[in-house]
Length: 193
Image 1 (spheres, rainbow, N blue to C red):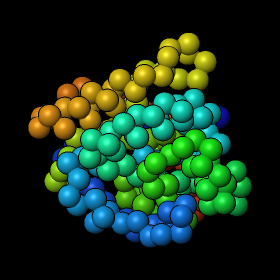
Image 2: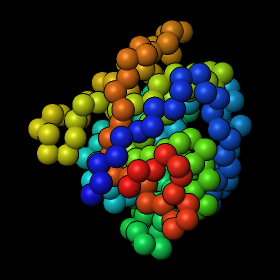
Image 3: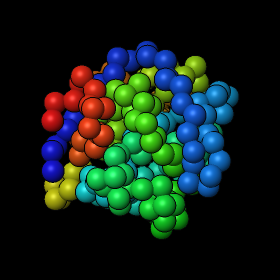
Image 4: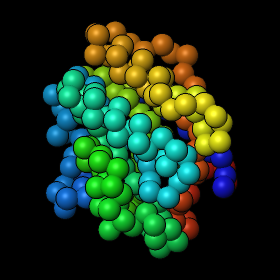
């Protein structure tokens, strides 16, 4: 298991476009969220121990903020040939089992992950109402086997700041997780593993 930090894409970056298939078979695009006061894009997967560690709290946190108008989308970009637990069929089962209320999209070409400079699972990117990046970092300080409870405090603070009309603190701690499982030849230049 390679512990990989997020790349910390520059704040102010416009949300890269995407148009991907959801677990329900519908296509979901960035433009679908144009009117949202905030957009949270999460690169995640089914099998990663770091995602599993936060999954239940992530389901609760995202549901809570979606009721407050935040748009949330999960994207899995892993190579499913080598990691079949992350296949679209398994994503359907995972979304149902976890109670994810947000679209859970499959990035088969891995182009969306590359455009976001996503590096790990989970990797969080929060955009404001103008779809400019205001937060990229950890959900909270908890990690598998850390003994620290999963609260989502860092992500909550960032979301609360935007919903209150402000900006999150620029002091942001990178997310940490398993590296995205790149297909051979797709490894981006920022991938060190």
